Image 1: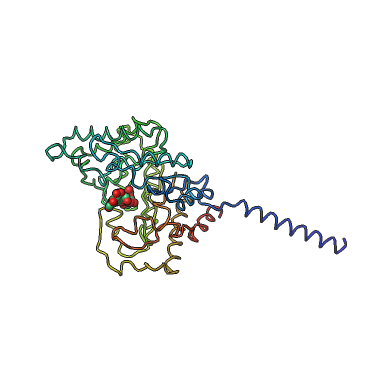
Image 2: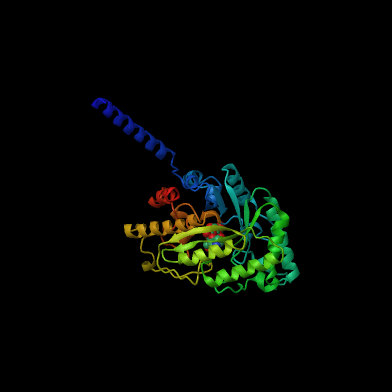
Length: 376
Ligand code: G3I
């Protein structure tokens, strides 16, 4: 065969190879929701700046990268029913409409929570604790009114949030003190009656703690034995560069899955700031005095720490991918660093870098790595 023929064949093969590789890279997903399609939903908690349409930059990122939304605050009981029988649905209606318009899987958060519950919920006209019967009725009225309003629009509700402590014991909330353990079973029954088709979840933080894991398993088993279906368990995923131990997190993930529940990673973020106390978990009531030493990156994040953040997020998503058959959704608790609650908790006025998109609404380098993980 003449030399020129061979060159032509090589040239053709090279061109074909280039064309195919160009095609395949053009076909490779470039966004989180596309990268994880078929593995699990990629969600984000959104505030009213986003659901109202005001924060156009964050909305653009949300539309490109995410396929599920959670309401950061607008569906909490202190917002929805600030006074007995007086409901405020404007922000929640806007959130649900925003989710529908953007074809997102819409999550409801959260029906029963000891925190951000209006004071009247537990108090009678004399300022004393209400009776067990009255609190059950108030819980039923709240859940029935809210869940019925959004029937058929909400994929799933965080029915009860943060009812178990790190040692597995019951949080001594007013719900527990006045009603007893049954408040959880009752809450799920009320929600199921209001919308038989939406998923119902239990949600909590520090779920990698062995004590909490065992306490949650025991509590869920008890309500399942009473005939209540728990569709999912939310592991909030408020992490640091070192906490939690991912082996412990995996044990909890497996334990919850073995209950027959889907696992949702519901509130993922990753603080890089010092001063975290694992015994506090994500207890919103926690607070500490501001000290400059606890806010070391106000002027920017050193490359070394940015690399640690990337590595930690990569390790987390490797674990989620390993168990994608058990995980229905991974929700980041916010979109961009500037909007993260972690800038003000447990210490107000700090600069954290807890999320996947920076203060300029740009993806951090780790986003591309997370997408590559799926293909590899
Ligand atoms: O909307 C009011 C505003 O009118 C008022 O001027 C201002 C004065 O402080 O408060 C505003 O409400 C704040 C609300 O966020 C909206 O910004 C509340 O004070 C503040 O406590 C609330 O913080 C939220 C916190 O839950 C308590 O509800 C955080 O944004 C939210 O990220 C955080 O999320 C919780 C999850 O729901 C449950 N798991 C833990 C997670 C972190 O604590």
